[in-house]
Image (tube, rainbow, N blue to C red):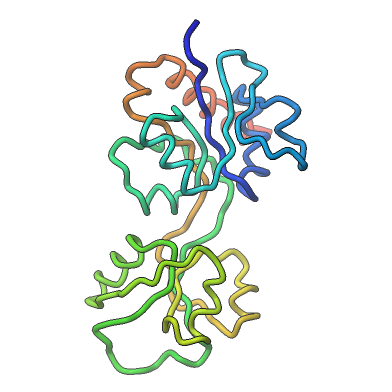
Length: 217
């Protein structure tokens, strides 16, 4: 019997939006997956040759890129940050919409040109590339959360983070000053698995069909 196809999903808001699409594509986890009290990370599926793992968003990309999982769902921000050569994102799922933006304290804009900035972010690669395009060297302070505190405490003059409504920025005295890229959730697959495992190609087709079904509804 062949090994199960491992499908990686992120915790949080994207997963809630992705579940209906997953169901239409035939990725239906067992009942325990929906138990809020369960600490399990791996779950069987209705399809006997498939299993789902639930991990942090950045780890979804790592599991898939290294072939530990053959497919998964993650935001395009993660895909762009890692830019793994073994990662392929064939389907934009049109969910999880937000943007990756630069923000700074209200009223800070308007100073003269700068050549160096300290920026707090969990996206060091995207942050450096963005500011390099402006001729600015960005020293990135890696934070995984509470980014909005960094400017007020003197850790960094700006932050780069995901923005949806902008309410969190406003509540912490920050304003969005530029957008690095729009973000939406993507189906990702391991390139080698796509070539060697027919189930992966079939899964890509199933998600494309699920998107068509949703648009027609």
